[in-house]
Every structure is written in C-alpha cells, then in structure tokens.
Length: 486
Image (cartoon, rainbow, N blue to C red; front, side, top):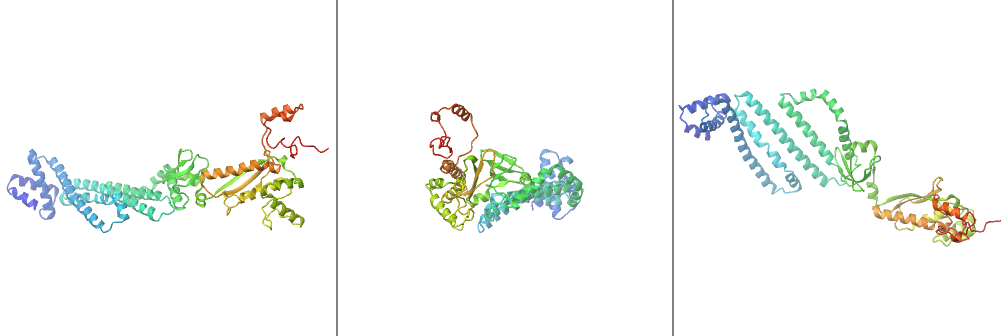
C-alpha cells in the first residue's frame, strides 16, 4: 500500500518515475508482483532522499543508499518481530514460571536467539530487492549468513550454560566438575561455527573444507598438544569422579597442597594452606598422579602414623620387681595379672590373645609399654575405635627403635586432628620413664660439657638440668648412680 501511495504521488510520465524504473532494473528482474512492489517501495525512498540532496544521477550512490535502506527496513521490521516474539514468550512464561525459565532468562537466551530475526528479515529482503544485482546480493548474503552463524552460536552457548546450570543444581549431588564439559561443548560449537563461516566465505561445502583441513589438523595437534592433552585430562577428571571443587588435594612435585577452587578444561586452581594459589594443567594430575583427601573428609576420620624413637639401650627384660612397679600404672595391673595367669597355665599369646588382651608381652619393658599405649588409645574418646589401631616397632636404626603408633582420630578437621596427635605423643614422652624406657636423642654440646665435668670425678649432684628421671632416683635401672653388681 505504501509503495502504491508513493507511486501515486509521482506522475507516471515524470522523469522521476523513469529514473526509478531505470534504477529498479539494476536491482530486480521482475516488473510486477511482491518483489517488484517491495523493491519499488524501497527505491521510492532512495529517490526521495537523493532528490532532497540533488543527487538523482549518482549511480554509485544509488546502489549504496539502496542497500542501506534495505538494511534499515530489515532492521525495523526485525526489531518489531523480535519485540512481538519476546512479548509472546513473556506471556507464556506467566503460566510456565519455573527454575528452567528463570535460568534461561538469566542467561538471556530468548534475547540472544531473537537476534536472528533482523538478519533473517534482511536476508529475505535481499532476495526480493537485489535479485538482479548478483555481486552486491552475493556479498550481502554471505555477510548476513556469517552474522547469523555467530548469533546462533552465541545462543547455543547460552543454552549449553542453561543445561549445565540445571544439571548442576538438580542432578550433580556429588559436585562433579561438569563446567569442564560445558566449556568443551561451547568450544566444539565455536569450532563448527568457524568451519561454517569459512565455508560460506569461500563458497565451499563444510565437508569439503574439513577434508582439506586434514593435513593442517596434524600440525595443529602438534602445536597445541599440551592444550589437547589438558582438555582430554579435564574430561577424564570429570567422568571418573576423581576431582571436585572443594576437595583437598596434594600434588607431588609441586607446591599444590590445599583446596580445589576451580576445575576447567585447561586448568585446575588450588588454594594452598599458606593462602597462595597454584594453577596446574589437568594433564599433570593425570600423568603424575595426585592425592585426594576427600574420602578421608567424608569418613570423618584422619590417620595418625608417626614414630617415637626409643633408645635401644633402655630396652631390657622385665623382672618381677619391674612388673610390680609397672602394676601401679593405670590399666596395667589387670593386664599383667591376666598375662601371668596365662603364662602359668602354659598359654603364651602375645598376638590375638584368646582372652581379648591387647597385643603385647610381659617379657620386656617395651612389650609392656606397647600394650599400655594400645589400651590407652582404646580408652581415648578422640580415637575412632571402628578403624585400624595398633602399636608396633619398626626396624631399628642408628637413631634407636621406632615405636610406631597407627590409629585414626574421630574427626577429620585439621585443628582438632593436630591437637589429638599432639596429646598422643606428649603422653608417650611423659610415660616412657614409667617403664624404664628413654627416648633417643643425639648428643649435644651441653652433653659434651657435662661429660667433661663428670669425668675427673666431680659430683653429679652439682650438675643442673639432668633429664628426668636420670639421676633422680638412684634405684632407677639405667641411672649411673645405681648400685652396680659386684
């Protein structure tokens, strides 16, 4: 109707009409129908603009202005269509208001997908108004398709993020790093988009382009080998459920020892306990291995596995006098009595005792001490009694006999764990002398000075700071002041 009204305003025999017809012949082949009507409407606008500035005979400017008017009309029509579609979506959403729609709105999916409408209208108008101008029509069509591919890929990426957020919120109870898979999907979408764009610009089929890129892809794989390995490793970490955000991990050979903050296809970010941040490629974790403390945290227990060095010279056979003295130690009276009863009956069971006694012996002071520490651990409420717990000795070294304590605390929290572990070994250090055992320590300069003082026959009572219980009780088995057998 508008084209008819504009044409009615210009006499059929006027030079303007002739110029319009002449110009139209350069852009459209048809002389009637919808294409001709639309093209004539646009050409009337172009002629009016040129007439205002007196540039009716500038052929080059007619072509440029004609394409600009086509673009402007497409933009206006597309914006109107886009507005109508968004309003319809909002109207439907009032009866379909759920978390999925909110997530899609948060990612602006509908706005991004509706951006396809203006270029689509422009593409249609090109076919109507530039059917006789092959060069201009071809380039405008290519540029429009390229723009549409980019807009569509952006919308697809938004949809991928919507899917990931919904899956992460509803189904990802174990907090798997599905963000890596979402990034991989977005990367694949952009690769496909790039191939399509190149194919459009060079007038080739995407399949033919992929075939030609076969040799070039080998070079790319060589150049980006580490990146590709990291991507594959990131996917493996996601699929194998071996790494979550929030996990405590330790990677040997690096300073990574802390909480995982981010897991992506190309990097794993770890917040270390010293408040520094370490970023590692996922491939390093797969190739070199790492320790994940997640299962320990989930079990609410944490292992204690440490040794206390015992001076081998202080280990000796248990005498009746020693047994009587050790009976005064808590829990040891009943243990010693039961073991003596079994010994008198000819039953010697230092391991897996049929009476339920802990592993240990009454033959040496160290065997008695192992039994005592095990009973003390069993009575300690801070120890997990449904996990492994034992006290043993390791192979003797130049630094003495390692007394190993292996147990699990009843909590996996860091600070309480350290406090419980401290309590255990402080108790070990404080009770060794009750069993006539002593810790091994390398001689210091102070020991050399004391030895030089005592060697000429000086009184030991004048020496300050002799370790307890040395020299405190002359009856102590290992005391230098004890009476020596003649």
